[in-house]
Image (cartoon, rainbow, N blue to C red; front, top):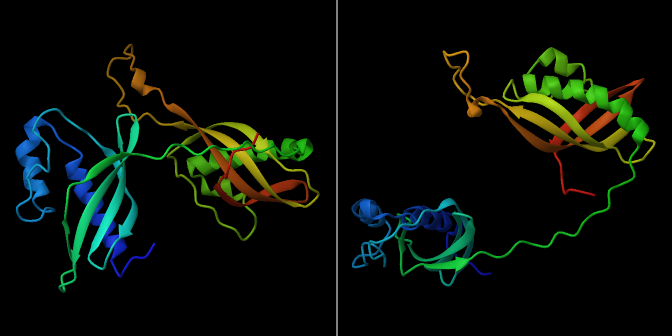
Length: 251
């Protein structure tokens, strides 16, 4: 898609900022909304941009999605957003004035569109697992993740390959369970493995003065996360070289 010299990144940021105002309204906020929209609209445009002042709309997760530049000055930006349980798109026509200030303005009425549907994800076969290596790794990885969560640098370093350094969560999460280990079959002492870890997420609740009081929000959440690790065996012990987010799910 030709961009005709249009400053795409700045244009998309402008349109996303406009969408944050345009897509959120209630009758009580009508005057405030009009004042905010004025910073984006060309002279003479409807101050409410086609809204009749009734009802309400709320949008979150507003992100630039695409841009179609039709000239060096004109473009149509598509912004993705979430409203309730729906993903939708907002198409915003904008004009760019290259007068030394690099200014933008909304040049026409926006259009709300449905978002594309989800992609179909074919299932991948789970690789043959090296059960012996997984059994060796399990207790060592459990200790690694306990220290990875707690931030015990000395404890963590016992499971990190010599010469390597891995930053920890510093107590933000507490290790709860190593739920799954996938170790592909292979004789190499260095392996690429995937694990599923369950973290306990602190509730952040303030303790009550009443020892008999109960607070459902005081219970920390359990959150499953998938990681990809490079591990290497030295003697009878495995060490972690690297830790990253896991890729596509298998099995």
